[in-house]
Image 1 (tube, protein in one colour):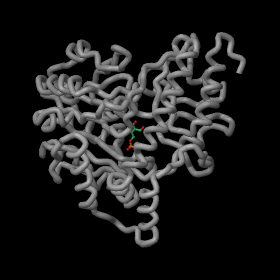
Image 2 (cartoon, helix red, strand yellow):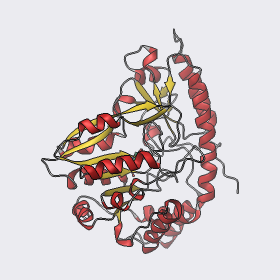
Image 3 (tube, protein in one colour):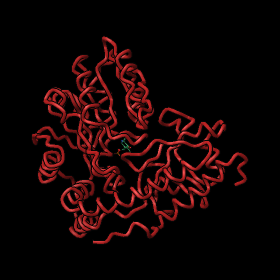
Image 4 (cartoon, helix red, strand yellow):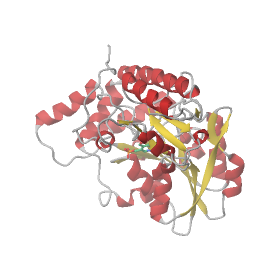
Length: 382
Ligand SMILES: Cc1ncc(COP(=O)(O)O)c(C=O)c1O
């Protein structure tokens, strides 16, 4: 079946976070959602629910729990038991639950930097002491600085945050890299909270996603794995995520706010997730092919721009661009003045970077890259 990712869909006026923030004329390539319609089976499932007409309270569907378990087994050979799956309305609430309930007030956490801001923010808001562990470029990939990590761990360290695949930076961590992190966690008795929302957005063929919990029984016992189909299948506004937690004590602690400050997913999140996992494999493949070509275009264009550099993006639809060579104090502001709204790198830990979302129509991406190229000339004229 053919899917159309090329025809633009008007998003201004639809309450889109990405499209409402900046004036018309600015190309918004910041927050991480795509400009593609969700897959037809996802939309049909939601429409069936609307046709039913009753939108009351719900229990998590057993069929969705089964679909999660089946997927973990089929894709990763990871055997998950039904009661390990905890439904949450999004990954972000899951990160904040982890920070608050998997550590005590006197315990310390380790968090990579740069990283999707809610990993660190959850620790800041929970008032937990933490250390930012830098990712470094090794053979063109953003990877953990393992020496720094070893030096940063403390006797009261309890939690290790991981973003796998990495946002920003686009790394698909290898089984060996994850096994080393898991061994480190075991040595220091750390819980691993792994945000794996980008697990289905794999752009490099032959590089599989490996859930950190799947590397060993011991890793599974000390992990909280946060997954969601909402990013890869285009329905983050409908919200639905799962925490997979083997250890009963960790599960109980993580679930402390359930049905109180943290609500269940909406019925639309459940419907969308079930349809995505059951019926949208071909759509996902088509979207990945489109995103791969967008990624190649971004990499090729950025390589030709003086002052900009980026590592190869293995996964995600987000390019992490080093603009330090431009010599401007605020690259985000600089590109905005040239008509492209990117995410400021400061949000993730480095103000000399910007993050570009290439989950959009190719024609719009080409336009944005032209503007970025103008802004990157030695004397940009606009
Ligand atoms: C790494 C990562 N985690 C979590 C989220 C947001 O998750 P949710 O919308 O399910 O709360 C994002 C969104 O960009 C993300 O990139």
